[in-house]
Length: 151
Image (cartoon, rainbow, N blue to C red; front, side, top):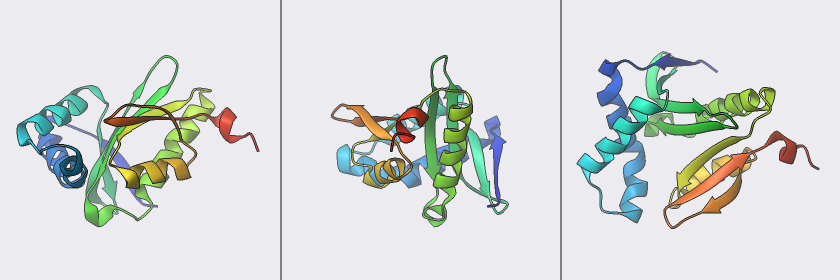
């Protein structure tokens, strides 16, 4: 699969906002009233703190992805794909790379997703993530290779 992860520069901030807004608005609209300024704050925080990279698929910007290496786990997210690049296996491909990285490092991989983002939750569960906790807004999920190997 022709996917490259390119570290963001300040020039990519607006693209990250655009892709977040396009990808997440349907989910946010189900849960809250959309507020551009508040959503921009969330994107800016991810952009500044989550090791964000632009996802290039077949040499075209397709979305954004971030992660954080924590002491006891790998934190995955955000992951935003433009609609025309969804359901092509890009998310699964990238998640599997992070699962492999966490396995090699003998650490679980954790993430959270909005409770109305059923499409994302289904993908995460398909790849072996389990809901570890939840609140009215999020599901917190974890993938642990040890749990996946039990069968």
